[in-house]
Length: 155
Image 1: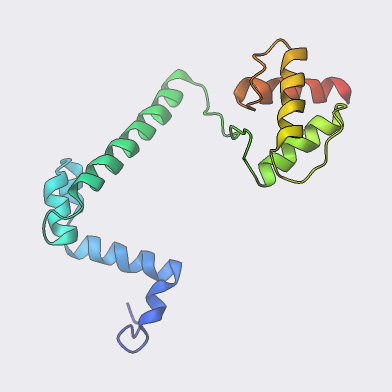
Image 2: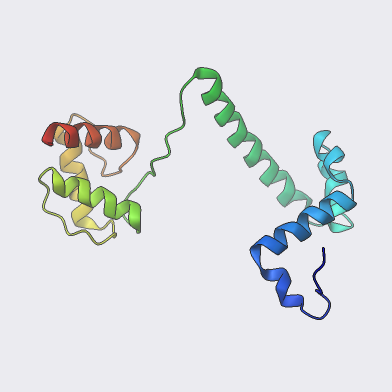
């Protein structure tokens, strides 16, 4: 790969280089045909030299297949997956701030602090009740959709 990792091993921590190293490892050990056959045991042996980590690999493979099946289901049905996060008490971050901002814009007096605390939960519950949604304080797909509709009507 043209990189002196022996004298500079910390270079392998850089995301782009670590990905290249992993891909080269995968290619040189010819792991893809085993993946294509769904041979988790053989893949584990090639990656780990034995069966160490087999249970984790089975669990992660099952999760990945379930996620791909959901995506495939959306594609086949013609719908698209909802990428909006499900938010609840204890959630923090930019998505919470966006939720708080939308609620404030339609009349709920909230601080925009990115922290889904009691005030945000109460505002969401009041919004849900006012829009005939289950007032559980959890901002999921139906709540986001109703918020978007309410924001359009307020504009």
